[in-house]
Length: 107
Image (cartoon, one colour):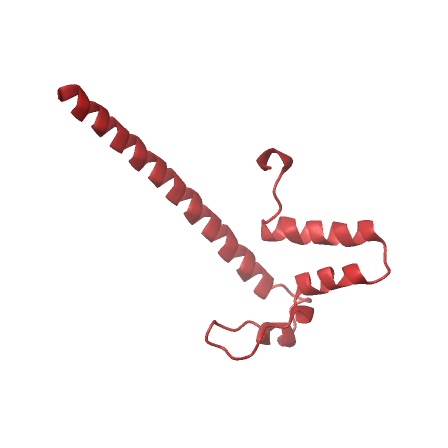
């Protein structure tokens, strides 16, 4: 009975440790996302009044327009007759800035 209690206690301690680690990772990712969104909103030059007006909360009745965002413009350019490597390089730069590009080791 004592060994069963000890093993259960160790298992719970390990589970709590893993949960704390995962929560820490989640908190760090949320901070990175908030910093990226803040930087995008306050970027000089590219941020126009029209693109700022497209950011609405979930209760808004105005739909988001992809052609007014940086990613919308970049992905929209894929349909045009331009150099594919330049288009993919632009998407890669956006992905690195937004932190949604993953490395080969993560795949």
